[in-house]
Image (cartoon, rainbow, N blue to C red; front, side):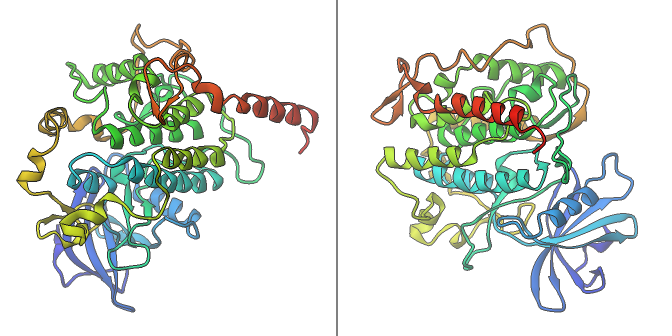
Amino acid sequence: MALAGSGNRVGVHYKVGKKIGEGSFGIIFEGINLLNNQQIAIKFEPRKCEAPQLRDEYRSYRILSEAEGVPKAYFFGQEGVHNILVIDLLGPSLEDLFDWCGRKFSTKTVAQVAKQMLQRMQLIHEHNLIYRDVKPDNFLIGKPSTPNANMVYVVDFGMAKQYRDPKTKTHIPYKEKKALSGTARYMSINTHLGREQLRRDDLESLGHVFMYFLRGFLPWQGLKAPTNKQKYEKIGLKKQTTSINELCYGFPIQFAQYLTYVRNLKFDEEPDYDYLLGLMDKALISIDEKADGHYDWMDLNGGRGWDAALNKKANLHGYGNPHPPQRQRKATNNSNAAIQSKRAPNMLQNQPLMPQRLGRSQLMTHANYNLTDVTKASPSRGLLAHDDTDLRSDTSSFDARRNQRSWFRKTFCCI
């Protein structure tokens, strides 16, 4: 690319530095704002690509310009044959940090990260957008040695979509046979079934990410099929046939309660974000921990943190993927090692899918997959056991609240 040289400028006063990553959208460089010497990230996308995303991404950043945990967008425009987007330069992604921490996060770290991710998603939803591509790669922490070094940021809004009218709050209609979009590993079951995505689907995807962090892998990773379409259907079927009880076994019951709640949300129902955030607080209490802002990656390199590593591989936003030494990789358990060794051939599962028509397999039915998972669940020393019986005990109040909200809408429909 002609603009890769360090002497080039875009948008009048942004100097292009070294290449720091690339993806399906194009290439990203680090750069400098010549007016104030601020470090920034500059994304380049071919103007004639099949599905240009940077313009829509820029619009989303502008809508969320005052939201906490969302990078600032400073410029969008055209330079030659490319679209250009200039945003804040941040630290590594949660996927990078997860890899460096031996592909397992502690329950304390997951609960704290989950709270931040939930807060970001709540802000996105409050601005009338759904995100539609939840994955660890799209959540980054801040720059090192800054007050926000461990704040979780959400980036890459190329798949985001407005789900309701900002003025009337009228929702998009329910539809089926929708094109599949998102990242197969984390997307909701309803998305696999071709149903219109809404807030509940973002939240279910977050739940899958939480369990990925806790377990080190998900049961539907590593599946193979002759075609992409068949692979996505196999992943969706595995999600349907893996009970919440099985998925969350051995971890605080609140993670199972989280998935139970979000999978039972109605299409246009407003999630109770405070309840979901409270579940993460209860998960911390169940393991005698508290949200003190200390994360696993802060203990790396003898307590000096991730940024003290010597071996850093650039990621899409700048501060790199510091790989653990070989001896640390060997210390991971066999199942994690097997998943990691298969990671390259199966990267397709973790890549965002641009919309494509999804035909339903005969096995992909509209069965009520989300009501049969939780018939046996309750806390046992704070952890989910196979023979638990009252998983719904902490969520039953929401049936009453849902009915109350429904009555309120019917009675005061003009509000």
